[in-house]
Length: 130
Image 1 (spheres, rainbow, N blue to C red):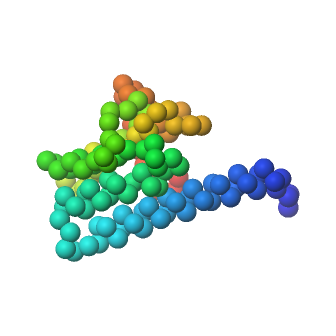
Image 2 (cartoon, rainbow, N blue to C red):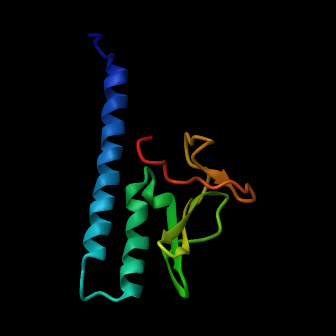
């Protein structure tokens, strides 16, 4: 078994910390959605406010959720050049859209992960098993 260099160890630790942050975000969204007394508007707003916390630079991240006539977005949401978009679907089809964006170019961004406005491609969630 090869020994990792100090830089490789630090990179691995950083990657694991980011995965933990993503999981914490998912757990928080699950708790928000699990509140039987919350209104749809409050659920969507709380989820929109939580999503940036799962990203590497939450202070530079904004989010918007549109479902039917309901729109929830972070206070800093604006049309941005660097964004991820995904349809929100259910059995009957598309119910809305989730947009998450960086307010500026994401540092060290992977070109395949983020698209500039005007690029017609969308990043979709990976298929099961990817």
